[in-house]
Image 1: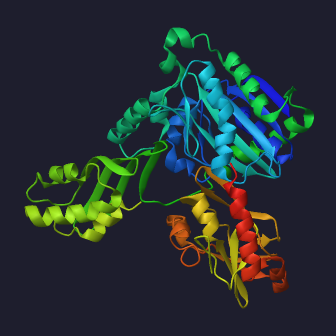
Image 2: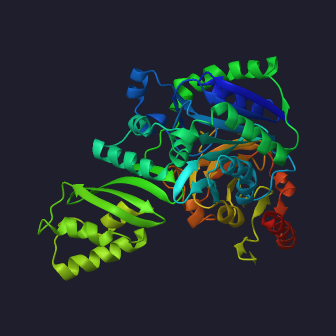
Length: 349
Length: 140
Protein backbone atom coordinates (compact mmCIF):
# COMPACT_ATOMS: atom_id res chain seq x y z
CA UNK A 1 0.00 0.00 0.00
CA UNK A 2 1.32 3.44 -0.93
CA UNK A 3 1.67 6.07 1.79
CA UNK A 4 1.47 9.74 0.91
CA UNK A 5 2.67 11.50 4.04
CA UNK A 6 2.26 15.01 2.73
CA UNK A 7 2.40 17.19 5.82
CA UNK A 8 0.72 20.54 5.31
CA UNK A 9 -0.84 21.07 1.86
CA UNK A 10 -2.92 23.87 0.27
CA UNK A 11 -6.51 23.70 1.52
CA UNK A 12 -8.18 22.30 -1.58
CA UNK A 13 -5.37 19.82 -2.28
CA UNK A 14 -6.27 18.23 1.05
CA UNK A 15 -9.49 17.08 -0.66
CA UNK A 16 -8.47 16.80 -4.31
CA UNK A 17 -5.74 14.16 -3.92
CA UNK A 18 -7.92 11.38 -2.57
CA UNK A 19 -10.67 12.06 -5.09
CA UNK A 20 -8.02 11.89 -7.84
CA UNK A 21 -6.48 8.65 -6.56
CA UNK A 22 -9.90 6.97 -6.37
CA UNK A 23 -10.66 8.22 -9.86
CA UNK A 24 -7.47 6.61 -11.11
CA UNK A 25 -8.50 3.28 -9.58
CA UNK A 26 -5.43 3.16 -7.33
CA UNK A 27 -5.04 2.48 -3.62
CA UNK A 28 -3.17 4.51 -1.04
CA UNK A 29 -3.23 6.26 2.31
CA UNK A 30 -2.91 10.04 2.60
CA UNK A 31 -1.86 11.69 5.85
CA UNK A 32 -1.99 15.46 5.75
CA UNK A 33 -3.32 18.73 7.15
CA UNK A 34 -4.64 21.77 5.31
CA UNK A 35 -2.34 24.81 5.40
CA UNK A 36 -5.32 27.17 5.75
CA UNK A 37 -8.93 26.79 6.90
CA UNK A 38 -11.86 25.85 4.69
CA UNK A 39 -15.39 24.55 4.96
CA UNK A 40 -16.28 21.15 3.56
CA UNK A 41 -19.88 20.10 2.94
CA UNK A 42 -21.27 16.60 2.40
CA UNK A 43 -22.18 15.32 -1.03
CA UNK A 44 -25.91 15.57 -0.49
CA UNK A 45 -25.78 19.06 0.99
CA UNK A 46 -26.68 22.31 -0.66
CA UNK A 47 -23.75 24.57 0.21
CA UNK A 48 -25.84 27.76 -0.01
CA UNK A 49 -28.28 26.35 2.50
CA UNK A 50 -25.77 24.91 4.95
CA UNK A 51 -23.03 27.52 4.86
CA UNK A 52 -22.91 31.30 5.18
CA UNK A 53 -21.24 31.68 1.80
CA UNK A 54 -21.08 35.48 2.00
CA UNK A 55 -19.19 35.31 5.30
CA UNK A 56 -16.81 32.68 3.95
CA UNK A 57 -16.16 34.72 0.82
CA UNK A 58 -15.49 37.86 2.87
CA UNK A 59 -13.08 35.98 5.11
CA UNK A 60 -11.39 34.15 2.23
CA UNK A 61 -12.50 30.74 3.51
CA UNK A 62 -13.01 28.39 0.54
CA UNK A 63 -15.96 26.02 0.52
CA UNK A 64 -15.59 22.51 -0.88
CA UNK A 65 -18.24 19.89 -1.58
CA UNK A 66 -16.80 16.39 -1.16
CA UNK A 67 -17.91 13.11 -2.68
CA UNK A 68 -18.35 11.68 0.79
CA UNK A 69 -21.48 11.95 2.91
CA UNK A 70 -22.13 13.65 6.22
CA UNK A 71 -22.48 17.29 7.19
CA UNK A 72 -20.70 20.60 6.90
CA UNK A 73 -17.41 20.77 8.78
CA UNK A 74 -14.83 23.46 9.41
CA UNK A 75 -11.36 22.13 8.69
CA UNK A 76 -8.01 23.68 9.46
CA UNK A 77 -4.39 22.98 10.35
CA UNK A 78 -5.38 21.93 13.87
CA UNK A 79 -6.56 18.64 12.39
CA UNK A 80 -4.66 15.72 10.89
CA UNK A 81 -6.56 13.94 8.12
CA UNK A 82 -6.31 10.29 7.20
CA UNK A 83 -7.73 9.40 3.79
CA UNK A 84 -7.61 5.78 2.78
CA UNK A 85 -8.46 4.87 -0.80
CA UNK A 86 -9.20 1.20 -1.47
CA UNK A 87 -10.47 -0.51 -4.57
CA UNK A 88 -14.03 -1.64 -4.01
CA UNK A 89 -13.15 -5.27 -4.62
CA UNK A 90 -10.33 -5.18 -2.06
CA UNK A 91 -10.83 -8.37 0.02
CA UNK A 92 -9.97 -6.42 3.20
CA UNK A 93 -13.31 -4.58 2.94
CA UNK A 94 -15.95 -6.33 5.10
CA UNK A 95 -19.40 -6.69 3.57
CA UNK A 96 -21.16 -4.90 6.39
CA UNK A 97 -20.71 -1.19 6.92
CA UNK A 98 -20.63 -1.45 10.69
CA UNK A 99 -17.85 -3.99 10.39
CA UNK A 100 -16.01 -1.70 7.99
CA UNK A 101 -15.99 1.19 10.42
CA UNK A 102 -15.16 -0.99 13.39
CA UNK A 103 -12.19 -2.46 11.53
CA UNK A 104 -10.85 0.68 9.90
CA UNK A 105 -11.34 2.98 12.90
CA UNK A 106 -9.35 0.60 15.10
CA UNK A 107 -5.99 2.13 14.06
CA UNK A 108 -7.36 5.57 14.96
CA UNK A 109 -8.57 4.35 18.36
CA UNK A 110 -5.06 3.01 18.99
CA UNK A 111 -3.48 6.34 17.98
CA UNK A 112 -5.63 8.14 20.57
CA UNK A 113 -4.74 5.60 23.24
CA UNK A 114 -1.03 5.96 22.49
CA UNK A 115 -1.47 9.68 23.09
CA UNK A 116 -3.00 8.88 26.48
CA UNK A 117 -6.64 9.48 25.53
CA UNK A 118 -9.14 6.71 26.33
CA UNK A 119 -11.03 6.93 23.04
CA UNK A 120 -13.60 4.30 22.23
CA UNK A 121 -15.35 3.26 19.05
CA UNK A 122 -19.06 4.09 19.06
CA UNK A 123 -21.13 2.63 16.22
CA UNK A 124 -21.61 3.52 13.47
CA UNK A 125 -18.58 5.74 12.99
CA UNK A 126 -17.81 7.89 15.99
CA UNK A 127 -14.80 7.89 18.26
CA UNK A 128 -15.72 9.15 21.70
CA UNK A 129 -14.29 9.84 25.12
CA UNK A 130 -17.29 9.52 27.40
CA UNK A 131 -20.00 11.49 25.60
CA UNK A 132 -17.52 13.68 23.73
CA UNK A 133 -16.75 13.00 20.09
CA UNK A 134 -13.04 13.31 19.32
CA UNK A 135 -12.81 12.30 15.66
CA UNK A 136 -15.09 12.33 12.63
CA UNK A 137 -15.09 9.99 9.65
CA UNK A 138 -17.05 9.00 6.58
CA UNK A 139 -17.06 6.73 3.56
CA UNK A 140 -17.81 7.48 -0.07
CA UNK A 141 -17.76 5.24 -3.11
CA UNK A 142 -15.84 7.24 -5.70
CA UNK A 143 -15.08 5.86 -9.14
CA UNK A 144 -14.05 2.24 -8.65
CA UNK A 145 -12.74 3.12 -5.23
CA UNK A 146 -14.00 3.19 -1.70
CA UNK A 147 -12.69 6.16 0.25
CA UNK A 148 -12.52 6.28 4.04
CA UNK A 149 -11.70 9.71 5.45
CA UNK A 150 -11.43 11.10 8.95
CA UNK A 151 -9.46 13.27 11.28
CA UNK A 152 -7.54 13.49 14.52
CA UNK A 153 -8.54 16.80 16.05
CA UNK A 154 -5.60 18.39 17.84
CA UNK A 155 -7.33 21.71 18.40
CA UNK A 156 -10.60 23.15 17.18
CA UNK A 157 -12.00 26.60 16.51
CA UNK A 158 -15.55 26.13 17.80
CA UNK A 159 -16.42 29.78 17.37
CA UNK A 160 -15.57 29.87 13.67
CA UNK A 161 -17.25 26.50 13.04
CA UNK A 162 -20.48 27.90 14.47
CA UNK A 163 -19.98 31.12 12.53
CA UNK A 164 -19.56 29.60 9.04
CA UNK A 165 -22.85 27.73 9.24
CA UNK A 166 -25.98 29.21 7.80
CA UNK A 167 -28.45 29.43 10.67
CA UNK A 168 -31.91 30.96 11.08
CA UNK A 169 -30.73 33.41 13.75
CA UNK A 170 -28.03 34.11 16.32
CA UNK A 171 -29.90 32.30 19.07
CA UNK A 172 -29.72 29.11 17.05
CA UNK A 173 -26.05 29.77 16.27
CA UNK A 174 -25.35 30.09 19.96
CA UNK A 175 -27.07 26.79 20.61
CA UNK A 176 -24.95 25.13 17.93
CA UNK A 177 -21.81 26.65 19.45
CA UNK A 178 -22.68 25.48 22.94
CA UNK A 179 -23.58 21.93 21.93
CA UNK A 180 -20.43 21.70 19.80
CA UNK A 181 -18.27 22.94 22.66
CA UNK A 182 -19.87 20.49 25.07
CA UNK A 183 -19.85 17.47 22.79
CA UNK A 184 -16.83 17.75 20.50
CA UNK A 185 -13.44 17.47 22.14
CA UNK A 186 -9.83 17.73 21.04
CA UNK A 187 -6.45 16.34 21.97
CA UNK A 188 -5.69 19.69 23.58
CA UNK A 189 -8.78 19.60 25.75
CA UNK A 190 -8.37 15.96 26.72
CA UNK A 191 -4.69 16.23 27.64
CA UNK A 192 -4.34 19.86 28.63
CA UNK A 193 -2.26 22.34 26.67
CA UNK A 194 1.07 21.28 28.10
CA UNK A 195 0.83 17.54 27.42
CA UNK A 196 -0.93 18.12 24.10
CA UNK A 197 1.93 20.29 22.84
CA UNK A 198 4.08 17.16 22.57
CA UNK A 199 1.68 15.75 19.96
CA UNK A 200 2.52 17.74 16.87
CA UNK A 201 0.78 17.03 13.58
CA UNK A 202 3.95 15.33 12.38
CA UNK A 203 4.07 12.94 15.32
CA UNK A 204 0.38 12.14 14.93
CA UNK A 205 0.92 11.33 11.24
CA UNK A 206 3.71 9.02 12.37
CA UNK A 207 1.39 7.23 14.79
CA UNK A 208 -1.32 6.94 12.14
CA UNK A 209 1.16 5.45 9.67
CA UNK A 210 2.29 2.86 12.23
CA UNK A 211 -1.20 1.88 13.26
CA UNK A 212 -2.64 1.72 9.75
CA UNK A 213 0.36 -0.45 8.75
CA UNK A 214 -0.72 -2.97 11.41
CA UNK A 215 -4.05 -3.25 9.61
CA UNK A 216 -2.99 -2.83 5.99
CA UNK A 217 0.51 -4.32 5.90
CA UNK A 218 3.69 -2.41 5.03
CA UNK A 219 3.18 1.15 3.80
CA UNK A 220 5.55 2.41 1.13
CA UNK A 221 6.19 6.17 1.35
CA UNK A 222 5.99 8.00 -1.94
CA UNK A 223 5.34 11.41 -3.41
CA UNK A 224 2.33 12.21 -5.59
CA UNK A 225 3.41 11.27 -9.12
CA UNK A 226 2.58 13.00 -12.40
CA UNK A 227 -0.54 10.93 -13.00
CA UNK A 228 -1.96 11.74 -9.56
CA UNK A 229 -1.11 15.42 -9.78
CA UNK A 230 -2.51 15.56 -13.30
CA UNK A 231 -5.81 14.04 -12.26
CA UNK A 232 -6.04 16.37 -9.26
CA UNK A 233 -5.51 19.38 -11.53
CA UNK A 234 -8.16 18.08 -13.93
CA UNK A 235 -10.62 17.80 -11.05
CA UNK A 236 -9.81 21.19 -9.55
CA UNK A 237 -11.97 23.35 -11.87
CA UNK A 238 -14.84 20.86 -11.59
CA UNK A 239 -14.84 20.98 -7.80
CA UNK A 240 -14.37 24.74 -7.78
CA UNK A 241 -17.29 25.44 -10.11
CA UNK A 242 -20.47 26.98 -8.75
CA UNK A 243 -22.38 24.28 -10.62
CA UNK A 244 -20.77 21.58 -8.47
CA UNK A 245 -20.88 23.49 -5.21
CA UNK A 246 -24.52 24.46 -5.52
CA UNK A 247 -25.69 21.34 -7.34
CA UNK A 248 -27.99 20.27 -4.58
CA UNK A 249 -30.91 22.57 -4.09
CA UNK A 250 -32.68 20.69 -1.37
CA UNK A 251 -35.85 22.38 -0.18
CA UNK A 252 -36.38 21.00 3.27
CA UNK A 253 -38.34 22.55 6.07
CA UNK A 254 -35.78 23.67 8.59
CA UNK A 255 -32.25 23.07 9.70
CA UNK A 256 -30.64 20.07 11.26
CA UNK A 257 -27.07 20.06 12.48
CA UNK A 258 -25.59 16.81 13.65
CA UNK A 259 -23.12 17.36 16.48
CA UNK A 260 -22.25 13.70 16.99
CA UNK A 261 -23.96 10.35 16.78
CA UNK A 262 -27.11 10.62 18.91
CA UNK A 263 -27.09 14.41 19.18
CA UNK A 264 -28.62 16.84 16.72
CA UNK A 265 -29.67 20.47 16.98
CA UNK A 266 -32.84 21.13 14.99
CA UNK A 267 -34.79 24.10 13.81
CA UNK A 268 -38.21 23.45 12.38
CA UNK A 269 -40.80 25.69 10.77
CA UNK A 270 -44.36 24.83 9.97
CA UNK A 271 -47.16 27.01 8.70
CA UNK A 272 -50.38 26.26 10.53
CA UNK A 273 -53.67 27.98 9.85
CA UNK A 274 -53.28 29.82 13.16
CA UNK A 275 -49.80 31.12 12.29
CA UNK A 276 -46.21 30.13 11.85
CA UNK A 277 -44.86 27.59 14.34
CA UNK A 278 -41.18 27.47 15.05
CA UNK A 279 -39.48 24.82 17.16
CA UNK A 280 -35.83 24.81 18.16
CA UNK A 281 -34.72 21.73 20.00
CA UNK A 282 -32.06 19.13 20.54
CA UNK A 283 -32.52 15.48 19.87
CA UNK A 284 -30.49 13.54 22.41
CA UNK A 285 -30.40 9.77 21.86
CA UNK A 286 -33.80 10.01 20.21
CA UNK A 287 -35.44 12.22 22.85
CA UNK A 288 -36.45 15.88 22.76
CA UNK A 289 -34.40 18.23 24.88
CA UNK A 290 -34.50 22.01 25.50
CA UNK A 291 -37.51 22.58 23.26
CA UNK A 292 -38.17 26.21 22.47
CA UNK A 293 -41.44 27.12 20.74
CA UNK A 294 -42.05 30.45 19.09
CA UNK A 295 -43.84 31.95 16.11
CA UNK A 296 -46.81 34.17 15.49
CA UNK A 297 -49.54 31.82 16.70
CA UNK A 298 -51.86 32.79 19.55
CA UNK A 299 -51.85 30.97 22.87
CA UNK A 300 -54.19 31.46 25.81
CA UNK A 301 -53.18 31.69 28.57
CA UNK A 302 -49.81 33.03 27.38
CA UNK A 303 -47.75 30.92 29.81
CA UNK A 304 -49.18 27.86 28.03
CA UNK A 305 -46.24 27.88 25.63
CA UNK A 306 -43.67 27.64 28.40
CA UNK A 307 -45.57 24.80 30.04
CA UNK A 308 -45.80 23.05 26.69
CA UNK A 309 -42.04 23.31 26.26
CA UNK A 310 -41.41 21.83 29.71
CA UNK A 311 -43.83 19.02 29.01
CA UNK A 312 -41.91 17.94 25.93
CA UNK A 313 -38.61 17.51 27.76
CA UNK A 314 -37.45 13.92 27.38
CA UNK A 315 -40.31 12.86 25.09
CA UNK A 316 -39.70 10.79 22.00
CA UNK A 317 -40.75 12.76 18.92
CA UNK A 318 -43.58 10.29 18.32
CA UNK A 319 -44.89 11.00 21.83
CA UNK A 320 -44.96 14.77 21.29
CA UNK A 321 -48.41 14.94 19.73
CA UNK A 322 -50.26 12.78 22.28
CA UNK A 323 -48.58 14.68 25.13
CA UNK A 324 -49.52 18.05 23.65
CA UNK A 325 -53.09 16.94 22.99
CA UNK A 326 -53.52 15.59 26.52
CA UNK A 327 -52.03 18.77 28.00
CA UNK A 328 -54.27 21.10 25.99
CA UNK A 329 -57.37 19.12 26.94
CA UNK A 330 -56.48 18.85 30.65
CA UNK A 331 -55.22 22.40 31.18
CA UNK A 332 -57.70 24.23 28.99
CA UNK A 333 -54.90 25.88 27.00
CA UNK A 334 -56.03 27.14 23.62
CA UNK A 335 -54.02 27.48 20.42
CA UNK A 336 -56.57 28.42 17.77
CA UNK A 337 -55.80 27.26 14.26
CA UNK A 338 -53.12 24.83 15.40
CA UNK A 339 -54.07 21.17 15.07
CA UNK A 340 -52.55 17.85 16.05
CA UNK A 341 -51.43 17.46 12.43
CA UNK A 342 -49.48 20.73 12.70
CA UNK A 343 -47.63 19.54 15.81
CA UNK A 344 -46.97 16.22 14.10
CA UNK A 345 -45.46 18.05 11.10
CA UNK A 346 -43.30 20.17 13.38
CA UNK A 347 -41.81 17.22 15.26
CA UNK A 348 -41.82 14.59 12.50
CA UNK A 349 -38.40 13.00 11.90
CA UNK B 1 -41.79 -14.33 0.28
CA UNK B 2 -40.20 -13.65 3.64
CA UNK B 3 -36.65 -14.89 4.20
CA UNK B 4 -35.15 -14.59 7.71
CA UNK B 5 -37.30 -11.54 8.39
CA UNK B 6 -36.69 -9.83 5.04
CA UNK B 7 -39.60 -9.30 2.72
CA UNK B 8 -38.60 -10.26 -0.83
CA UNK B 9 -41.63 -10.26 -3.16
CA UNK B 10 -41.55 -13.18 -5.60
CA UNK B 11 -42.54 -11.25 -8.70
CA UNK B 12 -39.54 -8.91 -8.54
CA UNK B 13 -36.11 -9.16 -10.12
CA UNK B 14 -33.11 -8.39 -7.94
CA UNK B 15 -29.79 -6.79 -8.72
CA UNK B 16 -26.84 -8.16 -6.70
CA UNK B 17 -26.37 -4.89 -4.78
CA UNK B 18 -29.92 -5.32 -3.47
CA UNK B 19 -32.04 -3.19 -5.71
CA UNK B 20 -35.31 -4.60 -6.97
CA UNK B 21 -36.83 -4.24 -10.44
CA UNK B 22 -40.50 -4.60 -11.26
CA UNK B 23 -41.65 -5.34 -14.80
CA UNK B 24 -44.47 -2.92 -15.64
CA UNK B 25 -44.67 -3.55 -19.37
CA UNK B 26 -43.05 -0.73 -21.28
CA UNK B 27 -41.23 0.44 -18.16
CA UNK B 28 -39.25 -1.06 -15.33
CA UNK B 29 -39.50 0.38 -11.83
CA UNK B 30 -36.62 0.03 -9.39
CA UNK B 31 -35.90 0.65 -5.74
CA UNK B 32 -33.89 -0.63 -2.78
CA UNK B 33 -34.82 -4.04 -1.37
CA UNK B 34 -35.78 -4.75 2.22
CA UNK B 35 -32.43 -6.32 3.11
CA UNK B 36 -30.48 -3.27 1.92
CA UNK B 37 -32.74 -0.69 3.53
CA UNK B 38 -32.68 -2.48 6.89
CA UNK B 39 -28.92 -2.83 6.75
CA UNK B 40 -28.39 0.76 5.64
CA UNK B 41 -30.45 2.37 8.37
CA UNK B 42 -32.03 5.73 7.77
CA UNK B 43 -31.70 6.87 4.17
CA UNK B 44 -30.90 10.59 4.16
CA UNK B 45 -30.46 11.24 0.46
CA UNK B 46 -31.34 9.65 -2.86
CA UNK B 47 -29.85 11.29 -5.93
CA UNK B 48 -32.51 11.94 -8.55
CA UNK B 49 -30.85 12.48 -11.94
CA UNK B 50 -32.69 14.25 -14.73
CA UNK B 51 -35.06 11.96 -16.62
CA UNK B 52 -33.72 11.24 -20.10
CA UNK B 53 -30.34 10.15 -18.73
CA UNK B 54 -28.79 7.20 -20.57
CA UNK B 55 -28.23 4.13 -18.40
CA UNK B 56 -25.68 1.37 -19.03
CA UNK B 57 -26.25 -1.96 -17.30
CA UNK B 58 -23.90 -2.36 -14.35
CA UNK B 59 -22.72 1.26 -14.47
CA UNK B 60 -23.28 3.82 -11.73
CA UNK B 61 -25.96 6.41 -12.46
CA UNK B 62 -26.91 7.77 -9.03
CA UNK B 63 -25.87 7.85 -5.38
CA UNK B 64 -27.62 7.10 -2.14
CA UNK B 65 -26.56 8.18 1.34
CA UNK B 66 -27.35 6.38 4.54
CA UNK B 67 -25.80 5.50 7.86
CA UNK B 68 -22.57 7.41 7.23
CA UNK B 69 -22.08 5.90 3.82
CA UNK B 70 -22.34 7.46 0.38
CA UNK B 71 -22.95 4.56 -1.98
CA UNK B 72 -23.53 4.04 -5.66
CA UNK B 73 -26.57 2.81 -7.50
CA UNK B 74 -25.84 0.81 -10.63
CA UNK B 75 -28.23 0.51 -13.56
CA UNK B 76 -29.79 -2.98 -13.52
CA UNK B 77 -30.33 -2.83 -17.31
CA UNK B 78 -29.40 -0.50 -20.17
CA UNK B 79 -31.97 2.03 -21.22
CA UNK B 80 -33.20 5.49 -20.44
CA UNK B 81 -34.20 7.00 -17.13
CA UNK B 82 -37.87 7.81 -17.68
CA UNK B 83 -38.87 9.21 -14.29
CA UNK B 84 -37.69 9.58 -10.72
CA UNK B 85 -39.64 9.52 -7.49
CA UNK B 86 -39.74 13.24 -6.70
CA UNK B 87 -41.16 12.52 -3.25
CA UNK B 88 -37.72 11.25 -2.21
CA UNK B 89 -36.29 14.75 -2.57
CA UNK B 90 -38.27 15.87 0.45
CA UNK B 91 -38.59 12.55 2.16
CA UNK B 92 -35.86 9.98 1.42
CA UNK B 93 -37.04 8.06 4.51
CA UNK B 94 -39.85 6.63 2.37
CA UNK B 95 -37.26 4.08 1.25
CA UNK B 96 -37.20 2.80 4.83
CA UNK B 97 -40.93 3.07 5.39
CA UNK B 98 -42.14 1.40 2.22
CA UNK B 99 -39.28 0.21 0.03
CA UNK B 100 -41.46 -1.62 -2.50
CA UNK B 101 -44.19 1.00 -2.62
CA UNK B 102 -43.95 4.76 -1.99
CA UNK B 103 -40.19 4.44 -1.62
CA UNK B 104 -39.66 3.42 -5.27
CA UNK B 105 -36.73 5.27 -6.84
CA UNK B 106 -36.58 5.19 -10.64
CA UNK B 107 -38.65 4.33 -13.68
CA UNK B 108 -36.58 3.03 -16.60
CA UNK B 109 -37.40 2.56 -20.28
CA UNK B 110 -35.24 -0.51 -21.05
CA UNK B 111 -33.50 -1.04 -24.40
CA UNK B 112 -34.13 -4.75 -24.18
CA UNK B 113 -36.22 -6.33 -21.46
CA UNK B 114 -34.42 -9.61 -22.07
CA UNK B 115 -31.68 -8.12 -19.88
CA UNK B 116 -33.95 -8.88 -16.92
CA UNK B 117 -32.81 -12.48 -17.30
CA UNK B 118 -29.42 -11.39 -16.00
CA UNK B 119 -30.99 -10.47 -12.64
CA UNK B 120 -31.85 -12.75 -9.71
CA UNK B 121 -35.42 -13.97 -9.92
CA UNK B 122 -37.66 -16.74 -8.63
CA UNK B 123 -38.09 -18.00 -5.05
CA UNK B 124 -35.25 -20.52 -5.09
CA UNK B 125 -32.65 -18.25 -6.64
CA UNK B 126 -33.61 -15.33 -4.41
CA UNK B 127 -33.51 -17.46 -1.27
CA UNK B 128 -30.07 -18.91 -2.07
CA UNK B 129 -28.66 -15.48 -2.90
CA UNK B 130 -30.12 -13.75 0.13
CA UNK B 131 -29.06 -16.45 2.60
CA UNK B 132 -25.53 -16.25 1.22
CA UNK B 133 -25.54 -12.48 1.67
CA UNK B 134 -26.96 -12.67 5.18
CA UNK B 135 -24.03 -14.95 6.09
CA UNK B 136 -21.56 -12.67 4.32
CA UNK B 137 -22.81 -9.53 6.04
CA UNK B 138 -22.87 -11.19 9.46
CA UNK B 139 -19.08 -11.66 9.34
CA UNK B 140 -17.26 -9.43 11.79
